[in-house]
Length: 268
Ligand SMILES: C[S@@+](CC[C@H](N)C(=O)[O-])C[C@H]1O[C@@H](n2cnc3c(N)ncnc32)[C@H](O)[C@@H]1O
View (cartoon, rainbow, N blue to C red):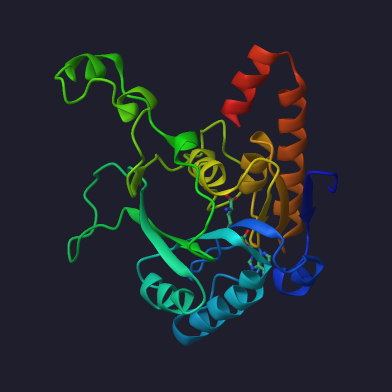
């Protein structure tokens, strides 16, 4: 698919990245293979150790020049690789946050020789001190009960009480189960809610979002849903086709009469 707002390419990122002008991207959302041996219909998740680090350096070197000076990059990783990849990223960009995605995995026995790992590690990096960041767009409203409880004079008239609080760096969002209506045929699809927060906070309206490893197109949906432009790459033709279908579905629902459209869009 290619229209004024979204370009979804069935192409290797390393081969296609030259299509993008340097310093033209507001936000990169990178969800690369983790090196855990998942079957993406290719060998891309079979790298480990030095080979994984080499792959990480290569995509970072290719992607970072595309960022504007006000741009940001989020990268999903596992705890096994995040220290080395963060160290390398810090040579190119400023680290803003380490975000823990708590997948809200229920307790079911689990590991007996170590603590069960139930999180993904997300790095948030910026190209300069003047990076774009709109906290108001991602604030979490206080419920009526909490607001009522904050009646002491020190709370009265406080903006944060009215507009909601700043999300913290632990994001508890349930992973997508097979039965989830949002779920596509992709083994490591990320919840839309997480990517929406990144897009809203770190890309201005009308700005350009790049996803080098698009998978089922979650970042594309988040970008279009919030009026941002998108370019993404995916080597597996089936995942790329799924992303096209997802975008087409989203487009139809978004064009439907407002209340229905908003509900349908939220369900994507
Ligand atoms: C972790 S998944 C991304 C999942 C995605 N965030 C979603 O929500 O569906 C990584 C994807 O990168 C793709 N991939 C691996 N190497 C690639 C490359 N060099 N260029 C483009 N895509 C690649 C894999 O086929 C896989 O679908």
